[in-house]
Image 1 (cartoon, rainbow, N blue to C red):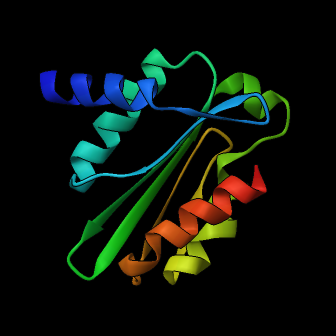
Image 2: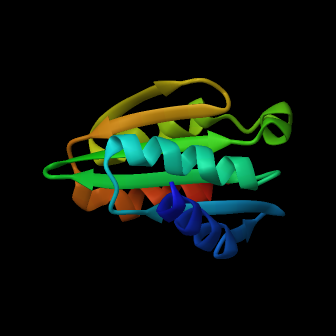
Length: 121
C-alpha cells in the first residue's frame, strides 16, 4: 500500500493539464490487481481529473480509465474514452461513466492509445 501511495503521489505531481483538466496518462509496470489499487489511490487524491493507466502483461495489455464525477457531469465519460482507444491496442472495453477498462492484444501500441486519448480530450 505504501508503495502504491508513493507512486500515486508522484504520478499526480506529473499530471498534465489538457483543456484545463488534469490528465494522468501513463504506462506502469503493475499487474491487474495493483493497477486497480493504484487507480483508486490516485482518484482518492485527485479532486478533479482523468486517469488513463496502462500496463503490459506479456503479450497482452490492460488499460484502466477513471474520470472524476465533476467531469462526468460535464460529459466526459470513461466508457466513451475506452471505446475510442481500445481498438488501437486490438481490444475491447467496457465500464461506466466514471470507470472503464479494456484488455488488448497489442501492448506495443499503448503509447499510441494514450496519444489518441490526449487528442480526444
